[in-house]
Image (cartoon, rainbow, N blue to C red; front, side, top):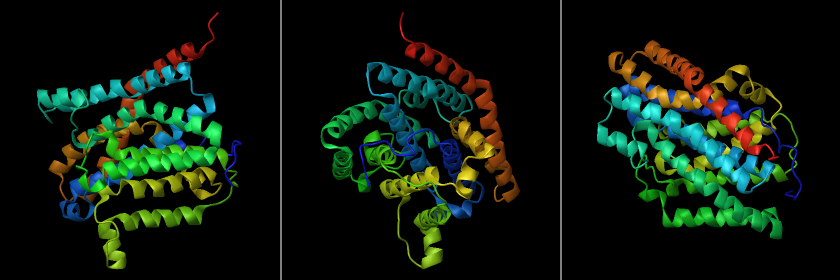
Length: 344
């Protein structure tokens, strides 16, 4: 039952980094398969987006939870904008220039990519999420005003109406693949926002949810057209690119069960390995395209090299994290701490 009290899952989520690690692994494996094994492209093309939708939902969930925990005011919003900019822009700039320097695109494309006016390969997701950062505080101000007056269930209704309106005015059938326009994906982000409200107001017992999580994973596999056709003889979801809302809802349920789980799923997602992969996920995501394209071009149809490319992508992501991202994060946290320090 939804209440106005904080639920027992409203604090820290040990599995969150592991879930982020899972998302980047989904993207990595999907891209590696279609690049190294060309015969899989008609069947697995676009499968990496399943991991992208997990990134979107998880990001909205965690950012909303932080606002609901720490409050929504000028100081917290200023700190939030500064933190998001420093978290995303420096590494995105480095990656964009890196791909330009290696000849992946020309100078005009580089300018458009850096200005968030054009996507390139996997980099299309960064403008989508970064622009959402500006929308989130506005949505939360409205949601909190409604919640304070009418209760948390009213937030669910309002969020559902907003998501429905965006789906009506921007139907998935008109979506251009890899569009950098955030408006198409607002409903996915709203799923993550709602998940935060629900978890903070729902007293969920901490127990073993492994069976249900396994069932969700099987459902996600069925969403892949080729796998569904192989198992059932029919296709449930013909186009992954336009199925972001349904996949986002499945991922939201997965996150809900994972942070509530006290069984093997929690152990795996909270493990040191998965949390490290999650911590390095942004660097890995930015760099993996370079590793895969370079190796796949020379080693087509080589499964051992495909597996090596996945490991190499993770290692390169870790190197970038320790060389660049960790130092940027240290600086970011130092400045944010200074911003939150009471003035004398």
